[in-house]
Image 1 (cartoon, each protein chain N blue to C red):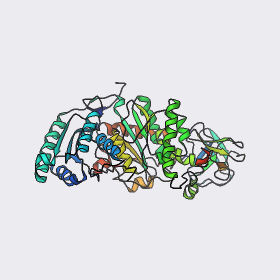
Image 2 (cartoon, each protein chain N blue to C red; image 1 turned 180 degrees about the horizontal axis):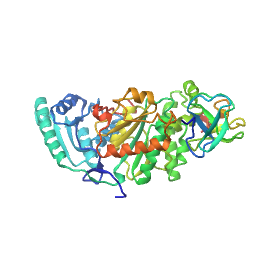
Image 3 (cartoon, rainbow over the protein chains, first blue to last red; image 1 turned 180 degrees about the vertical axis):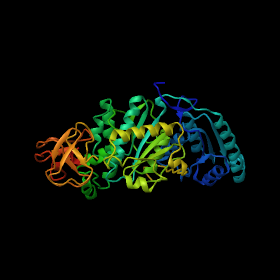
Image 4 (cartoon, chains in turn yellow, blue; image 1 turned 90 degrees about the vertical axis):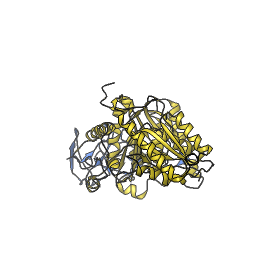
Length: 384
Length: 91
């Protein structure tokens, strides 16, 4: 197993879960309360809720991929769908099966017969699945079992020199060992896309990286906003950033120096290991949701101000960019990278600490976000 | 305690981890030079001489170019650096 110290849950389609959740997923926003009620009454199922009410519009495909990908994330032992049994809800379940979901229960309100029964039956199903999940053991897993999402939010002047490049060191180590790592946030790489494209494994992948940024930029430019001309902002300049490339590299260095294997659409599942770029919005929770839908099973989130964002399916490791914040928000921050700015630790020392934490959390160590029950979810829409 | 942070071995600039005073000697990571002016925390200092139009290298990547000759120990910022591509019109 390439000397991997990992132990994980093997799924029937060959993918690996780092957690063994029972997910309760309402496929219509009107069933949100029922899903929450099942979560509360059960012995440990997790529910998410959203605001999609079956609208059939230009965002439908994006919403189907997101919910189907989320349901089939390998960190879920099983998923309970709670639905109104509309054709598009059934389409989401079919898509989740194509993405590898084999262990699921479909509860439609009409079949079950009443709102009250829906919660009763859902809770009973959840508890049975939880009992079955407890019987599954972690088994030795290869490095490729890790699918890491790289995220930053609430950035500060130190993000680009402490937590982000240190995470890049850890990401490079994992990619080198055969794991998968995913950088995202198209808004954040704007200005450095030519530098990332130069690190693509093929010229075609490089062109895809540049085109992903151009597609985003042209969608904004038609509103008369020049994203490049306005950057870096006066605040950035006061902090010491001189060019847009420098600012964007500070975010993109979460992905270290590895070569890019490919570009993923929002919520797309990578087919092979390696470093990828996923086209997501800058919004933290929409990015996190896109990662879960793309079958990311663990996330490292760097923050300067402290952002209490977590996921129902993925453990999220929070890394502080500065020591004062790491010290004041102890119940939020897992690791402090501020020691680099304090001059007491090197990038590679902190990078190694992040790597070791990823391995420990992959093997079951609880993150602060998990302990706090942070389960944020947000659908990403392009048109509405 | 480190005074500066060199993010990549091929960089010609480093980030100041605290305010550096004019004339302050920096001896770190096998390099020794004096600051030629005071530089605020978080700002960049040249760790090598950089010629006019030469790339400014940080993270091992080209973040822009010098618009004047920059001597090691100088403050590197918007007064002597320009991004390679300033607006979408130049992409």
